[in-house]
Image (cartoon, rainbow, N blue to C red; front, side):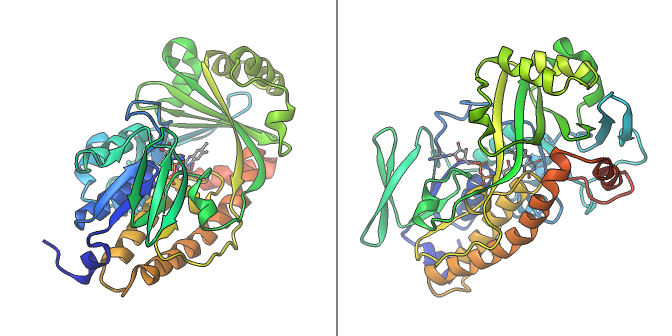
Amino acid sequence: METSKAINLLQNKEVAIVGGGPGGLTLARLLQLKGANVKVYERDFSKEARVQGAIVDLHFESGLKVIAAADLMDAFKANYMAGADQYRMVDQDGNVLLDEHNQGPELGFGDEHFRPEIDRGALRNILIAALLPDTVVWDSQLVSMAQVNDSWELQFKNGKTAKAAIVIGAEGYRSEIRSYVTNIKALYSGATIIQGEIDDPQKECPEIYALVENANLIAMGIGKTISVQPRGDGGLTFYASSLYPENWIKTSGIDFNKAEEVYTYLTKYYEDWNPIFFTLFKSANHFVPRPLNYFPLDQDWDTKPNLTLMGDAAHLMPPSGEGVNTAMLDALDLSECLTSGEFQDLHSAIAAYEKRMRARAVILGKEAVEGIKDFASPSEESIQKLILQFSPNELSNDA
Ligand SMILES: Cc1cc2nc3c(=O)[nH]c(=O)nc-3n(C[C@H](O)[C@H](O)[C@H](O)COP(=O)(O)OP(=O)(O)OC[C@H]3O[C@@H](n4cnc5c(N)ncnc54)[C@H](O)[C@@H]3O)c2cc1C
């Protein structure tokens, strides 16, 4: 049993983590390892409520380090998707530009360049299984909260309420809690993704399925990209990305709930591409348009004594292969600040965490913002740059 000041900062205090994504669940696990009293309030109706998306790669210096700190490496090794960290890049005609499949010895755990991929749902399940029973309170969409003396009273959409001494906003980029910390709003990166889900790709788009080969496929033409990833359930997720005006999703007039309308749009937009990509669009049964936003890199706010943010709620950035990894590092930093015994009170513990978290986010966010246009809407030069970056001899293989 831990008896340091560490526990004392959280002693007799309930911690409410709002949002059961990779950041919030990791934090709950790390705090429970230190004996803290934690609940995770999650909007989803249940664990099975929705497909969590495709794969995510964890990095040696961030995601994997946190998995080890959470004592979950064995569970991770039992669930990761071996070989899925490889990349194949093709041009708009389907000609292979770069292929990591079957190229030399595979990297393994312990190698700092190894970035094993795991299905997002599998990662979520590992984290949930490691928590004490009933830690996650499902169907708890936070709508507002109010300070009552030194505590917070949380109000959920289903009419229920909860009290907590400390609240952590881990509910992603549309965070409600963020508005209680700062009024700094997100900016638009210039790029938008149309995400599509395919449940039976082997049958519906066999050529693409073969090209993906259970790993990462990136297809690039001038001004537009399609990336395709396997899901743990045998399906595929694709992201068709390009540059669009800020409110294009509304102004386009496309009803993204109608697969036929999205198919018509995509086949037109990609009309000079090899028609095998049209089979991808045709097979999708569900589309989600995603404008890629980010929080300003120089954001700052006055630390609150019993409230903070983590993950996308704190520092949303365009996809660069770092978001989940960074959210997990936030969880490690915050759990350490709250339980290490280094700080006299919650306010200074949270201040120290926020300083570290923001410093990291500035560096990663800058890379993500600078890189997104090259990725979503490449030029000939940026395609060559990406081939170099993803080449088997290079060290970085971010999604
Ligand atoms: C297209 C795309 C591809 C990406 N690829 C990668 C990648 O390859 N690698 C990588 O590391 N990152 C990637 N990212 C980024 C990554 O998905 C995010 O950075 C990461 O999921 C953030 O984790 P989080 O826990 O902070 O928030 P989230 O994952 O957004 O989780 C938030 C949770 O809060 C819940 N919630 C939301 N609102 C409420 C509410 N009001 N009350 C209660 N619960 C609520 C949600 O249901 C969800 O479970 C990608 C992002 C996109 C858009």
